[in-house]
Length: 400
Image 1 (tube, rainbow, N blue to C red):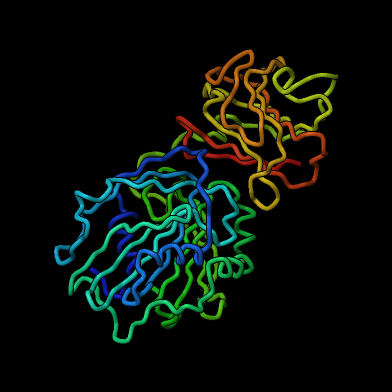
Image 2 (spheres, rainbow, N blue to C red):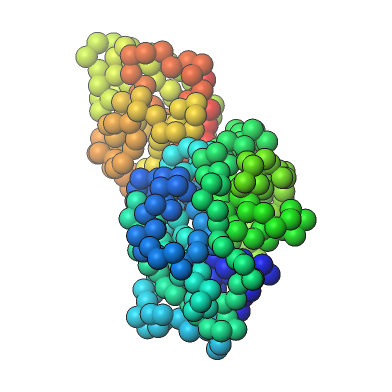
């Protein structure tokens, strides 16, 4: 199946069991992941699963997904010379990887997979770390299945962690890429004891991929192609070995991507206004009197799009969720509040003159109440995430 030094252990196992599933389905597109952490925290948590010195850490793999994704595990491709434990009928049929709405440029991840090898028994162990909790996933073994080169000692303890590697990647072009790809970008980062890229010599490396695909490495709904950003970092020195954007094909032989919430709404550019009158509220007028509010006018709505078909949130200048907005509202062309939601993110719509299933008309308005402090020039960014028939599609608007 694999030989350390020829094909990376974790990548091979993940591609067989996790990243080539029998099928995948998008989860709750607005669900936020649990606590994220860097590779050091993930390694500390996983060490309790493989405490013996005979287990050598071979690879560390972190994933930040734009959308929560449920994956069906596929064990049919395990070679006959490899033994999987527990056997497939005792392993879970699917796993769910949470979405991550934090700043993906920090080197933190919501989901980690760590790979250990035990040369004396020709065994590899996969450990999952989520929300800081580690649990064994499976072991795979066999004399001709798992082999390590002579003198293999695993990953050294003094390598740069994912946070440091991420800083190097961002300075080498990652920040520029993320500034122009603020919607739908996911991240995978892998630390490999023996790099899969021969020209970088046999030194441990971090491989980073910022990707627009619906799920990294999977045939999934989402864009059919796009520009990714790939980078490699020497994990011993922290030096960037390569960093460049690259056009990628996200899908092959797949069904058509979902309808676009961007096209369905066709929102006009946001306009900053101040709520008028006295005593008005978000439920009554969409913008509390005296508050600063952004107004976006629906310019299409020919698809009978409904409030339940999308969710709204606002990011600050660093790409992290903002706590500034005090509410969201959707108004009819006549200015009546159809639905509204209070708080710093739209979690569910409350009824106004309509409800979450009321079709929007051309000229309907989306209001974002930002409170009493003028938000102009703060580089806020509105995220519109499709749901229902528009799941896995998204749009973004800079708020002036």
